[in-house]
Length: 469
Ligand SMILES: [Zn+2]
Image (tube, rainbow, N blue to C red):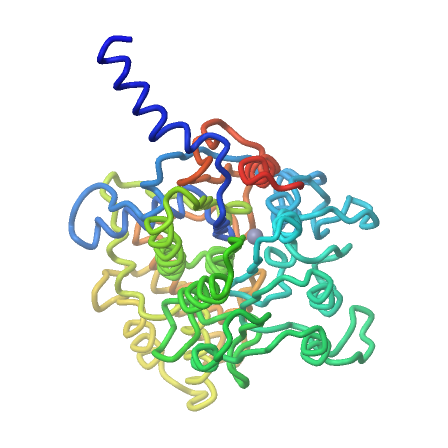
């Protein structure tokens, strides 16, 4: 061997060989519900636009070394729902829309990668910004013929024996799918050895963070989801709190590694409502979770795998609706989600049923910048005013329904106008068939280097981590 080949031999032995056959000890599987490539792009364009720069300011995961994209269709439909989409990402098999990690007849259960991780001795955490029994988290621990069987889904938690769960709460804690009263889920979980912890403060006070825990919102707050990031106030439980707590819980007194799934569940909700500003804040909020995982990766680079993806795209989001000049900066004037604006308008109607158009217009302005910061044309104003007349003058209450919200028509039209004036186009109030992005970094991440079917993602993670999926 000449000197050069001796040197390259030494480099191979020292740096490359140790990575061969290495399996990740820490696996982060981060899912932005409804987060299509344009959702990521919009957050990045917006971050540049608010600095008056043309281009993109990349999120953490956009800078991961391996990036590809995946299909999302289900076994039954070209456009998947979150149950079939979540199942594909959890078990590596397609199923019918509505079914959770079972075959399309809802009779044969499929094993999820979280169970495979648990079998291998890893601690397992399943977390979300929506309820713990919602489709995406449920796909990892439950096997149910319908995503709407919330009580039955939560009842699958004891069987999983997973170590840490977190989310807003449970949607049907005492009533079965066929509407029968049943023993409270919290009691069942407590009997199975889980400590139920309400809120971040209570979590921080736990002396033994290695015990099996379920972290939820404090009593008296929403059980169906955490607040939208744009609406959060100090003290509200955030996805970042949940992720930090999960990492803490899964690493305390544990040398066997972990598998942690975190879902940014409300990117989907704001996209169903076609509310771009709220969607941007949700994507940026999800990015904070990825930042925490990335910080962990930097401390354990040879033992960590992070995969970031989505179950489907929501809203058929388009950036650019005519002019070549993007005006996403206008969205920075929106102070609350469409859902909260809707509540504020409802409150005004209760307090002052005969409020004038100027009163309503001022409320919309304060929360969206329309008229005061952003010019609104007469025909656009007329549409919103017509909804006002119907509601406040003729007292016919109108709502704009999306999957997770029934928003006031006035609020929905105001947000629609703001979106149109901010270069945003939505082609649907439902999911679309668009490919979703996949980003990976860490041990084995280099296998995410080609076009994927959504079912390939958990299969690849299982292969890299030597899990029996
Ligand atoms: Zn979804």
